[in-house]
Amino acid sequence: MTDTPAQRRFLKLDDVMDILNISRAQTYALVRSGDLEGIQIGGRNIWRVEETKLQEFIDESYRKTAQAIAKGEIDDEPAED
Image (tube, rainbow, N blue to C red; front, top):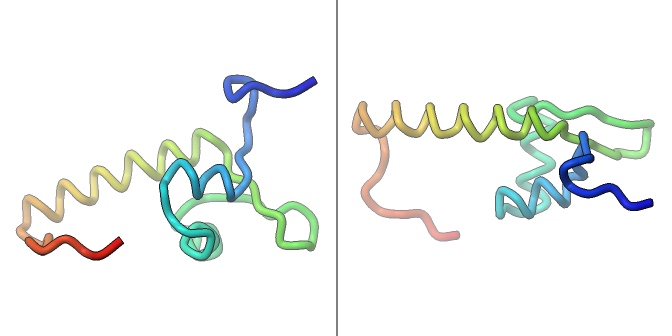
């Protein structure tokens, strides 16, 4: 039996990477730093991120970006992806 996305509670880092459209290293750094709440399963560097925690991270990122724009702290030149 395969879980559908609606039935899934935890995401693999590869799923988070795809959703945020960032690299594996960036995703790993987010959870290791605690910026994105995740849990480590076992001792083999297996991480999972709860879907609600990912959504909270996204919402907070929007809030921080809006604040930075309002304060004029955002550069006019886009960074290279």
